[in-house]
Length: 509
Image (tube, rainbow, N blue to C red; front, side, top):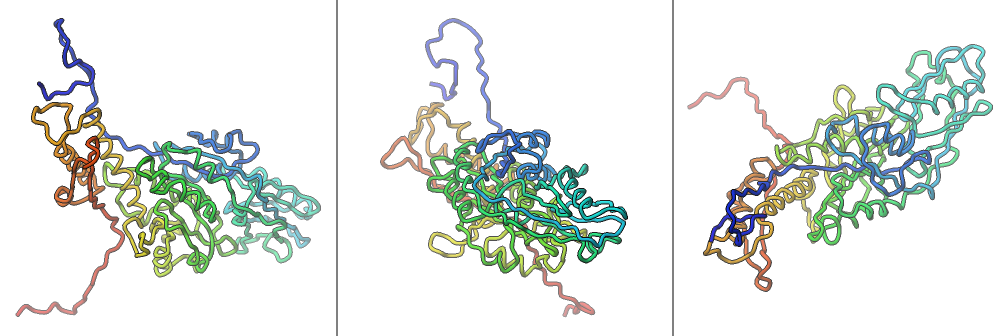
């Protein structure tokens, strides 16, 4: 009997002469990923709720999610990062049961001819003011500017609609909910000749606070089922949403369970001052990442957390999916987030001590470079302690979960390519191609692991081989049990150097 195994050509029964070839794939693993943005659409958006839709352009998203919607802006900021070739989906959840934030801008009577300038969600808007203009005409111009705003360089739109009457602009958030408290309005007094900065001319107020957090995250995650969803980017970090993420992704019955192996990770964000961020509590979940942003306001960040988390996840997505050239393992500090700005007051830029403390509490951090650009400092999961309550750093780094999912997918693909439709036996004395033994499985595991060490995902193949155990299950002869201790490659985050200076080197004795 031959040890060569055919997939299609029969092993016996052929009598007629011929030269027969069957074509099979030898297997070439190609990592892939899917990036899913979850948020609110407007009533003008044509997409159905809780339905992931693949998108490839801003025009598509505008039609599906609606102009100025949360989802529209999340996609826009995502596309400003390095996302070439990354499949992106959008999924809308319901905000109808929430309360929309409503605000007013009152134009006073102290107007002077010139230009009135203000920022709305970080976008600079300038209104020409003539000597004959009244508060009513200026308010109408402000409302028109809010409604029609479009940044031709970045594609940005505003998350509000506006009306005006008798010198008062009334704006309403396009989407409902507490998230709208992060909508930032600011008049820069340092702009030379800014007539809106004159005392009494510009008064902004909130008349109805945005209220409520969505309940639809659970339904959206349920719809995903086991379809590929490597990045689930959803700004909501309230207790209910985080609980839904934990239920959907957990290792017992969720996407990371042994019976499903569909993996994925939940990316969210929130705002608050340093004290508030250090007081947050999470679910000790290695399948969630929380990005901590400082609150908006005169001194705070002009951009909302929904933009920050979309930018952060998109900026590292390509690397975290790359288990073939080692990018999954690399440090991410210094990665610039295009399209989001830090707090206006540098006092609010977190120093090393603040960032180090936040990281120990499960909050991912950012810093600012000399050009004033927001950079990733370190992205982590919210996993802090093991099952016994002990401190556990194994799955702290975001790299760890993507090394795990990417590495296990790679090894499983190797096993499928080499051992699909085989029989299991303790030995193979006839060298039959259909028989696989524990020794064969062990050899394949070592081969796959060695490839992954060469690809910069795992390390120390020799020790792995020495600790690897393969055995046929004692009660089920159809089953092979494996103990596979994996050592991951770690990000190069810290360099500690003792720089000792001498006026003159000591002379050798």
